[in-house]
Amino acid sequence: MIQMAGYLTLAVALVILGVAAFVYARARQSVPNGNASVYRVRKYYAAALAVALLGALAWSLPHTPYGAYSSEEPAMRVEVIGRMWFWEFKPSDGSSADSLVIPLGKAVEFEVTAADVNHGFGIYDSEGHLVGQTQAMPGYTNRLRLKFDEPGHYSVLCMEYCGMVHHMMINGFTVR
Ligand SMILES: [Cu+2]
Image (cartoon, rainbow, N blue to C red; front, side, top):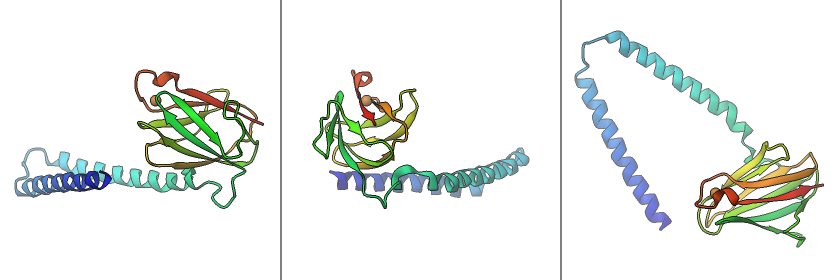
């Protein structure tokens, strides 16, 4: 099924490439001799946009959180399963999932997956600031390592609309 989707994506990409090549070839044949300065400006605009986007990419890539604390052994691992419509926690140390406690200031790994459809695993501090997030996808596990430097209650909300009761997909844990 996944392989099939891959071939389909490749086929569609080739069609799009073909259309783009066709349009490009036709555009070179007959440039309308209307307002040529518009085309010059457009070229500079495209170049400026490319520079800005590549710059933003170069700046932001090293800030991605997904390789964080990769050299440390996490103090705790928590398996997280998103379902319609709740979050299930399975802490590796066998402690209670209903009143999950995460150690303060230590690396913790969330192993996030989904049982039915895509969900968005988002962790918010007590003031409602997003402190970490990753996709919860069926058949795949995203590993998110975080350290919590502030004790207190953290909420886990779904960040991707997943149906009728999406807004009730709330769980949480305590950091201390
Ligand atoms: Cu949702």
